[in-house]
Image (cartoon, rainbow, N blue to C red; front, side, top):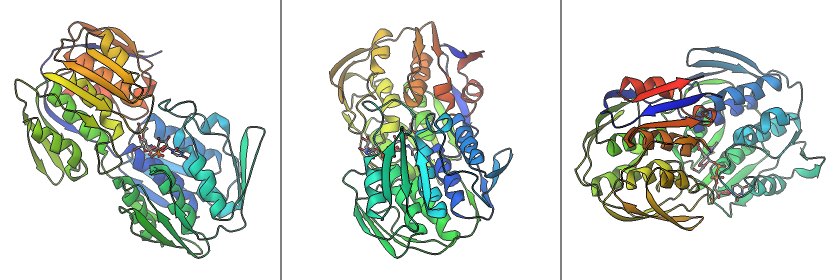
Length: 420
Ligand code: EPU
């Protein structure tokens, strides 16, 4: 199994470029199933989750031409209506294939999707099942598969009892080819949802309100293909910004959208971390000698993203005073703090959703296993400030979401090597 070895406490500086957003690409790929004509996608990150989504796309009969960061996708005819466990078990976002498949084929079979283990047991899909029923689908469960059928989905008024990113995106896709009008309420408002809706509208869908809590979709008989550029990954940009802050480095983060990072940058201001922003760059200029402790609560967009909670938690181990980290979205996303404790951090877990950090404490390198994507990148950040060597295995988890992360971090001065 491959691992990363980091020799910490080296100064970082220079420029780093942000790739296309994983959680935008993972929706644009299945959305290409909604039409039989070509969809051209630019700025596609070369990450394992995208590879898995493309394998699933191909397994269903889709044609793929991939050159550098450009993808040409087309799905003339499905050769099956089942999402095979071999693919679906590896990717939570496999659930995004369900709506287009059902809308175009009238049926779909799929197992419970896999992905990061960051919630109790398997991450639930009750909202999806409930929403499809509300749109008139018949739902059965047998032999480990959900089986959904609907000649044509019907528009409806649907209220999400939990704000959920992929559920919102799923029903934008389902309603696009449904009969009549669908109104979705209590929707998630993430930039990736806006990006999906804008792309589908260019292909002929009629979606209004994406980026607000109420989205209305007037169903159409069909949509065409189109061309789209994946928006920059705000989580990757925020991760690099936190890496700069914790290592007290000046860093230029290029090809990003600072306007998608208001929550993090507002906190940086409170911590007196000096930065500059332009339309497509974020420059971390100066980090104070003493970083103040901060009580963080994750929240749906535009609040502080759960996907940046673990890097921020590493930052707080170097802050002076007591910080409370309250992870409101997932109940296993703080378990990685046990590894920070092994490295020397002073962290007390109050309950699965809250930890208290007393800082600052020096960190020492250790051998660690990356439990999931965001905890994995946080191990790299912790390794960057730790004394000695930090070894991280199970790096597939990190490479699921960060393209060539070792090569890119090496260029800004991190002493990191990949051992295969
Ligand atoms: N939930 C339910 N029932 C459902 C669906 C969700 O109870 O049917 C709950 C979840 O358990 C969670 C909450 O709703 O407590 C919100 O989860 P959400 O559905 O928004 O998460 P998601 O759509 O599965 C996406 C991203 C995650 C990101 C979250 C929150 C994708 C592919 N994944 O997940 O990304 O953490 O939104 O922003 O878009 C990551 O990139 O590392 C990652 C986990």
